[in-house]
Each structure stands twice: as C-alpha cells, then as structure tokens.
Length: 208
Image 1: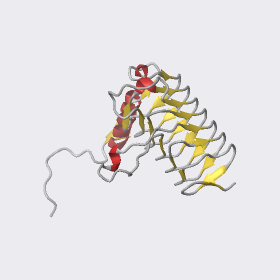
Image 2 (image 1 turned 90 degrees about the horizontal axis):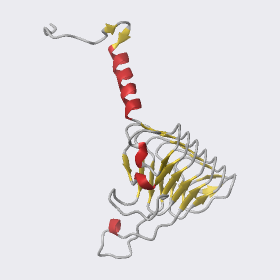
Image 3 (image 1 turned 60 degrees about the vertical axis):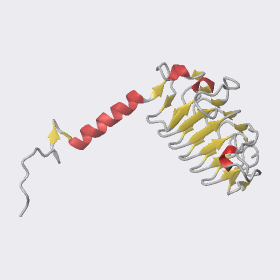
Image 4 (image 1 turned 45 degrees about the horizontal axis):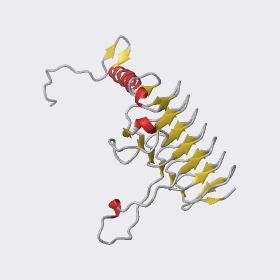
C-alpha cells in the first residue's frame, strides 16, 4: 500500500508546455549568463584589459590579481577556471602584465593558469579541459621546511599563437611552446617545443 501524499507534486508537471526541468535549466542558463564576466561589466573593469566579445563563464574557481591580467578580444574562458596573478589577492605585483591571454582563445573548463612572473598565451590558442599552467615551482632541498614553502625562482612561460593543448596537459615553468603546436592529452611539458610540431607524453616529446 502506497503512503498517502497530501502535498503538491511537481514531477512531470507542465508549465505552459514547459516541464519543470526545462524551467530549471532555463533559469540556470539565464543566471549563468548574468553572472559571467564580460567586457564592460563591473568585474571586467578590474582587469588590466578585457577585450570586446570576451567572457569568463560562471562560476570561476579562483580569480585574483585581475589588475595584472590582460584578456584579448573574443576569448572564451570556461566555467570553474582559475586565473591568478601573484600568490595571494593582496600581493604587491611586479607589473600590470603578469598574465596575458590573447585574442580569440578558448580556455577549457576546470583549467588553471597561475602566474607570478609572466605567462603569455598567444592569439587563437585552444585548451581542452583541466589544463594547468604555472611559472612557479617548489623544491625540497631544505629538510626542515615544508615543500610548499620552498619556492624556486619564477620562469616565464610562453605559448605561441594557434596552438592546441589537449585535456589534462600540464605546462611547467620556463617552457616556451611555439606557434601552431599540438600537445596531446595528459602530457607534461617540461621543455621547449618548436613551431608546428606535435608533442605528447610525460615528459612531452616531439612525435610529429
């Protein structure tokens, strides 16, 4: 015997031809668009530059040091991405161009770009999801200090125009990736890659 249920039921209910799921999805999409950062918005004005037609989708995972982040025109940065200039939000920064993302780029969801000195991403660079790029690393030379507190000098990272970085790629400090380079999924780039190559592996090697 089924228990009596006196409250309202919305399961499968239609609202002018729209299901409850349709209504919820539409509301979520509306809110995501409203909450996104786009050129001319209050959040965009905190950046060193934020080009026309660019957007950072809602929600970002972490976002600080905007005054040293420059985003070109027509660039899409997916949801749950982290963009940071400096180690913490109140840090005095060394310049207003610590993180530069070019025109017409696509940064896949859940990606992270952590810049302390310089990360420069050229025009029309595409990332798959979960890409990680940083110009800062740690060492373990002092046995009395936690590794997380042992920093090595920052090394600038450069990614050339029209390159593609597949899902889960990691780019380590000091690396320059040339123009029109394809980097395979799950690769760890620890050394420079020349223009026009295909690279894959951990560490990444030129394979084509």
